[in-house]
Structure formats: structure tokens, C-alpha cells
Image 1 (cartoon, rainbow, N blue to C red):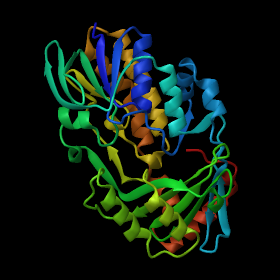
Image 2 (image 1 turned 90 degrees about the vertical axis):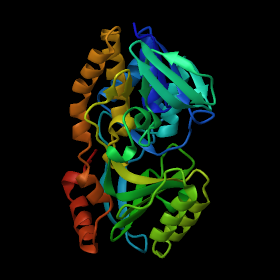
Image 3 (image 1 turned 30 degrees about the horizontal axis):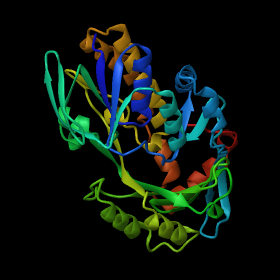
Image 4 (image 1 turned 60 degrees about the vertical axis):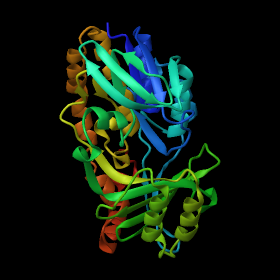
Length: 370
């Protein structure tokens, strides 16, 4: 049995996988670069099988109780007048803040953790993987799974450079804490200028709000760890915009030490495993925040990977193949994000007016979902 499994990343995919593997009798260890579970993040959607997985893990009622209670999206002009609204409430779906979901998963996942450490090298052989760490002593595992996000270190070590698998989707995005007074309670308020969006996400169940930014761009010389350059990119994109609340949102975002900035991108791999190393979550298939499906894919994918390994505990090759075959159809569907991006960031003023007209139609006004 491939009993000892190292999981890199203590977020949604990694914690879900650790929980499911432990239930099946494996001995997972979770390594996380941060000194503690990450508590920030935006709102994420759970629906369908993702809610079934959450319920089976024992966190279903807690997820419902922590729901963000956001009704929908509204679009405003330069003076703050509402031009259209879309009700995004969908029966059988729950939106929860990422940090709240991670906290619930962490509470239910009783496994070994290595916080403040990261994988330095991976050396595979026929019987296992020797792992060296930055911040911990070398260890030996039967399998290694990368659940470490879009910029996965495990993927880089075992599969190759990120650039080989990343498909840039023509936009950059950012989010940070915001003054809740700048947005309507229980709504995501968005203001557009051609090729740009600034908005406020205001949950009905949280005291704080989130500022959102997205802008069209050609590829930038972007390092996901260079926070100074990220702030310059954001300032360059929105610094000249004096409409609506954009100046205040931008100033607060630039002052927020937890500002998150990244390219809107997807990961496409021909396979999610190589030898004794596999990937799950954004490390394997990132669909981008524009998909609205990152958490759903993470929970369901981690559940399917654990189930495949439990079914073939002595044959990781067969288990990894089954995992890819059962989960890749859902991933391909969720990676089709074109309409979502055009709704959020119209390219032109005419496109914005067309979007607002479409949003006022009864079909969307009754609830669009995603």
C-alpha cells in the first residue's frame, strides 16, 4: 500500500485530499510554506458534488452557516448610478469566503502538518520519493501530491517550468480589503471603463469588504512574488481613473499588505501525474477565478483522487489514470470562461452598454449562476 503520502499545500485541495486519504487509512503529511493556514481570499462557490463532499466530511452545516449571502452583481456608472443587476443566487449552491472554508477544512483534518517549510527537491525511484525541504529534515514518502496552486513548486520540480503549461487569458486581477461603505450590502458592485473593472464585494455575513480589480493587458514581466512590481502594475492600470470610488479603492488596495495580484491564467497538462508524483487543484488544472469553479473543482478533484488511490492502494499508476479520466471532463467544462470575462470586463464602451442591456433581460435578472 502506498501509505505515506506527502501533500504540498494547506488550502482547499490539499486539506480535502488529506482528510479523504486519512479516512481511507493512508498516512498523509501536509507541508505548507506559510507558518499557518492562510486565512484570506475571495468568495468561492460550492455546488453539486462539492457540497456532497463537504457534507461527507462533516462540514456541510458549517458551510451553510458561514455562507457569504451575496445576492448578485450590480453595475454602476461613473457617478454610482445603477445601470443593471444580475441575481446570481442559484438553488443548491453556496458561496463562502475562501478563508472560512479553509478554516473549516483544517478543523476536520487531523493529520501531520509541516508549516513554515517547502519542498526543495524530489527524487523518485521504483519504491518511493526522497524529499528534501527548506525548513525541515529530509523525508521518504510513497507518493507526493502537489496541491500548491497556479505557481506550483511541485509541478515545476516534477513536470517542468510553469511557462510550458500556463495559458495567459489576456487579463490581470487583484483583490484586497476595502471599506464596506463603498459597496451595497449583499452585492458585488462593479464599475467599468473600457477594458477595466473595479468593484466591491460586500458579503452579508462579514464586517469587511473586498476590492476587486481586473484589466485587459498584454503579458507583463510578472513575478508572482514581487509585490512591489505588482503594486506598480495596478497603479499604472487604475491610477488615472477618477470615476466612482476607484481612487479610494486603489489607495486602500495599495496600502493592504495582503494585496493579491496575479495573471488571469489557466493550467493545461496532458496528464496530472508523472511516476509517483501527482497534482490536484489549481496546480493541475487552474481554471482561473473567472470560472467561478475553483473551490468546486478542488473539492471534487481531491475526493476523486483519494477514492482512486483507495480503490488501488498498491497501484498508483492505475489510480492516477482513473483520477484523470473521471475528473478531466468537468475540468474542461469549467475552463470555458469566455462569457464570464466579457460580462465582467467589456472591451469597449459599446460592449459595456450591450452587457448592461443583456443583464436587464428577465432571463438573467431571475438568476444566472455560474
